[in-house]
Amino acid sequence: MMDLRFDSQDDKAGLQLIEELTASAKKVQKQVLVEILTRNAETEYLQRFLSGQCDVDLFKEKVPLVNYEGIKPYIDRIAKGEPSHLLSAEPISELLT
Image (cartoon, rainbow, N blue to C red; front, side, top):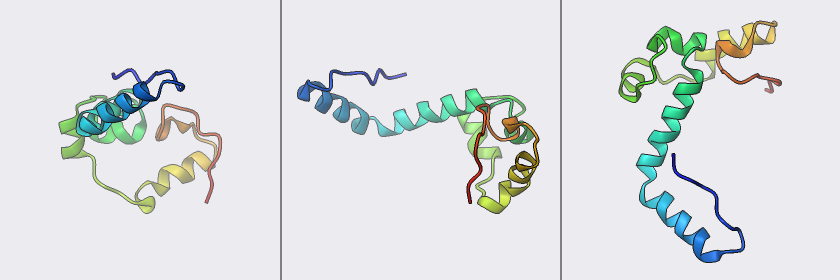
C-alpha cells in the first residue's frame, strides 16, 4: 500500500503525493478494493459470491452491481438486531435513511 503520510507544512511533499495518487489512480483504486475485499471477505453478503476469496477479477465477475433495494434485506436484518457482519467486518453503529 502506498504511504499517504507527509508533512502538512511541506507544500512540495503534498504536491508530490497528489501527483503520485493521480498518476496511478487505477492502481490506487485496485489497492483500495483489495483492502475492502480482504477486510470484508467473511461477510455473509460477499460469501454468497466469493466464498471468502479476495480476488478483484472474481469480484468483478461474480458480485452484481446493486442499489439500495438489493441490500435492503441485509439492512433490515441488521436493524432488527442481527450482527453487522452480514454486510461489514466493521461494526455498524447507525442506520440512517
